Image 1 (cartoon, helix red, strand yellow):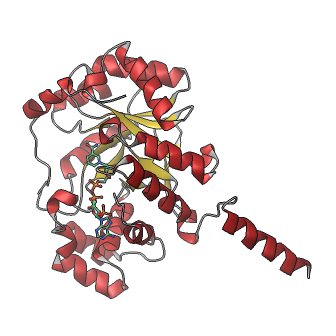
Image 2 (tube, helix red, strand yellow; image 1 turned 135 degrees about the horizontal axis):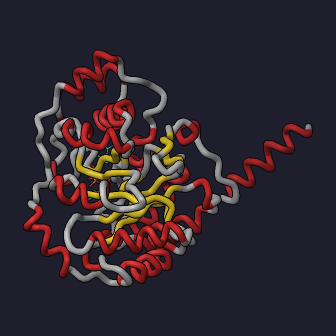
Length: 312
Ligand SMILES: NC(=O)c1ccc[n+]([C@@H]2O[C@H](COP(=O)([O-])OP(=O)(O)OC[C@H]3O[C@@H](n4cnc5c(N)ncnc54)[C@H](OP(=O)(O)O)[C@@H]3O)[C@@H](O)[C@H]2O)c1
């Protein structure tokens, strides 16, 4: 009788939304201990191209399905959506990993400190788990100095470099010269562009790789997910090509943040911890590499980002 009462109470609490239970998938999301000691879930939700409202909805679906890591950026214009979802979810802050990125127009000593405070306000958070310099143009060294101060002040826990694969010079300017070392590098990476050189380059620094466009991105028009080799492996496991691709990222040791607003995709993408690719299947996936990136912009073209203003 007592057991029945407890079960009814639990069901009532779950329906009222006042308890958040991780599903079996969420429980199994692997983490990585970064070079600064913080532990980051190696799987999360990407939010590129999502409006504030769509982003909030997507985060809430994701949280209900066990996601605890969200990747946003000032440039995406949806940090408010992330913050609202975090609040509404009721999930203890310590269980979440929230990443955002500073845009080049907010780089510079003093200026970046102000930008971080505005970011915290948009996210309605006291601290950001991982803060990136989004692009390697403009005064990213000045930005990094303010980011180091934000770490010391407890406003940010981990610093990362995003798209610092454009040249050795920009990579070295942060990695070799700054006091607080980056813990994560975020770059385009997927089975068609496996980024072997940069993966070797970051190894001595113990920098974690995090992959954007892990499914090829919207610009690829789904070409990666239509690959017959991936489709064949998917059929073997009774999984989708997206699930096989994300599972490949996880088994390669990457952090992966597939973007999705479609609730079915959000659910599907985390259902990858109940199977494993064999060594042969991993070798086959690795053979798909053809250094084919879907986003191609030179460092010179990126200089224009410095003058691109964004709303607070
Ligand atoms: N640092 C950078 O410069 C940078 C650049 C790009 C992206 N990022 C980050 O990395 C994240 C991932 O990249 P991304 O979102 O651009 O590309 P992506 O994750 O490779 O692909 C997202 C696209 O795939 C679709 N999709 C998601 N799950 C699917 C599934 N199971 N089956 C079929 N289609 C599926 C999505 O559709 P729906 O939207 O319809 O659900 C969306 O069109 C971004 O969201 C962002 O957080 C960072």
